Length: 494
Figure 1 (spheres, rainbow, N blue to C red):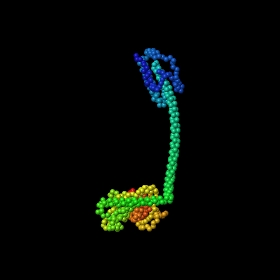
Figure 2 (cartoon, rainbow, N blue to C red; figure 1 turned 135 degrees about the vertical axis):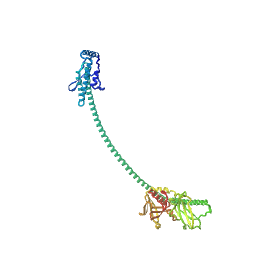
Figure 3 (cartoon, helix red, strand yellow; figure 1 turned 30 degrees about the vertical axis):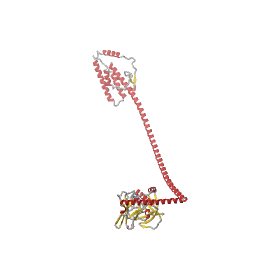
Figure 4 (tube, rainbow, N blue to C red; figure 1 turned 45 degrees about the horizontal axis):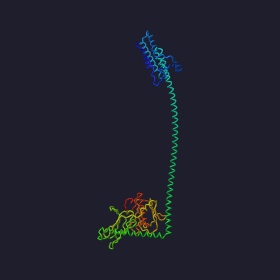
């Protein structure tokens, strides 16, 4: 005889009833009793206050089985129960497959409960209790499903409320960002306008300061000149005494310089062979910018200088480069700024004899001339008083004062309000010291504004003449023009 166990109930639950989720929490070890009322509402039924123990249940089941022993065997009963359970599972599965697509979850659970109710009437004993327990589980699942749907509805409402809140917050944030962006743009425009106003104010202040500074300098120069004039008026004797002393000192310095040069020449002659080498000519003059050099005969038996062929050259201090000075064919030559730092050499040809003379050393610059020119460079235009001695190589008899304007872009020669010549710096313009003439050669320069038009201008002093040459060449160099004499090939910036 085979003992009937609870495995049949477990099999029924696995095949006919879906597994219960682990999230379901039960308050007791068994399902409570529920029933479905009107409108498919789940109603709780009152439990039997008398609960049988396991021992009593086993005894009652044993008695029932003994009563049925004469009618059916346990094996036949188990076979019929299994067939009925399989049929119920088949019917439940068919119903689920037919109606699952269209029925809601509650209706599906109700169908399952009805199927179990119908099954309950077909079984008896322990199996019937298992079916009732399954029905209770289905009812509990319906309750749990109802609660879960209620929670989901609440969560959905909360999520919807949160989404609405976030949407409103996003719109508020976007509005605030737009307002801040517009405010920032306004602030940036105001800042740009303020910066532009400050720049304009600074530029205006700089222009006013520059104009005021120029006026102050001009006023100061006028005051200094007026002070000097007043001083000369009140102390004429003292000023004249100082001028006489300066002239005397200059004369002494010139004399000592000539004596020094004579000693140097005698020393050089001694080194070459002393008195055995005859000396026909020699160079007289100070070897410095602002003076002039003159060829002098050393005896009465040599030909006159005017009857000799003469040509001056400039030689580099190391003697490696020799340049012909175009037009320098006279016995007198005044060094110009190109000659500073170079040795001057002259060739004398007479009666087949070739005599070469040279300075004892490089030409020295004039004291204070560089500083004076640097001060003139700061001006836009510098005026020099001159006298026109030649025009296009012809002597000009008038001795009226003209004004030579040396500017940053051009040179202009005027007489009063009349412009005699005005030309911009160009490759056809020439400017250099006069290469030959009388004792005033150190104060004269040659200026060719354009091809076929030239002047010889005499300045008030050697210093003014050399300053005009250096200033004009400086401005021409800034315009990428080499301003020099005829056929000069001196490098730029000399």
